[in-house]
Image 1: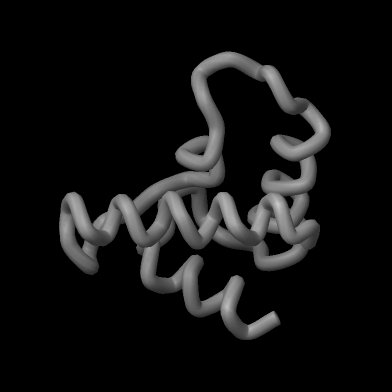
Image 2 (image 1 turned 30 degrees about the horizontal axis):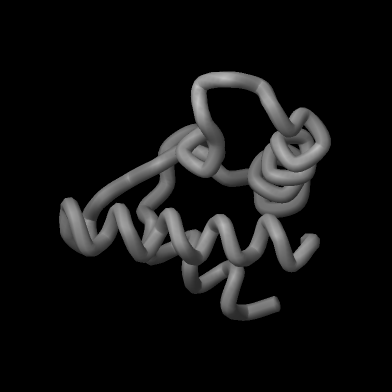
Length: 71
């Protein structure tokens, strides 16, 4: 995982947890705007989420933070 994606995931997860609490769920689309302005990064996130970790569409933000921190 690139440092750009790692930083984005950490920032978004922390923001969502702060706004909505520790039970907040999100998908990898939460890390991107509604425009597909960075397809390479989107594919990196999708591959990490779906192929590497076999995560469900929605997962708890705290779980994603733990996965990112473990690498």
